[in-house]
Length: 212
Figure (cartoon, rainbow, N blue to C red):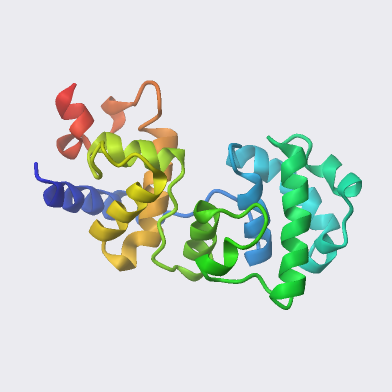
């Protein structure tokens, strides 16, 4: 199967079987989503969702978070991976938003990556989820799944290379949703060590399945 045919099959499958695909992070506004995504780096969404309610209760706005001290915020984050760095990043992010963006979460990738704790993946998540911009965030699931099933070549060795390949081949209006398709498929079906091929509807188009 040629790559164009593979994309067509996989997109058609997800549109029919996962018409609603959204982040599993729990949030109410762009500020809360940005905090959650920063915390989610190398951490499960489940753990983040257990942690953020107390943070949002005590720091309901970016302004209130900007006034937090490290020792004050750290106890809310200590159960998350890399709590020291993430505590510093959240406070730094909030201060920069207040000082340089008039207290409003910016909504372009170029602006977001200027904030502490925000890399390209985080910026792509926030802009695609909040504003449905055609940005493809490549986390470990997207990186693994897109290469395994054959959407991108094995030579795509970096997240940015995978991102460019996916954005080039997925219709623009579906990119924000395709990000979640690949994440959820990788989280529950195409898992890292023992992919659940018997439960997968992508077998006819999957390079990994065809070769094994």
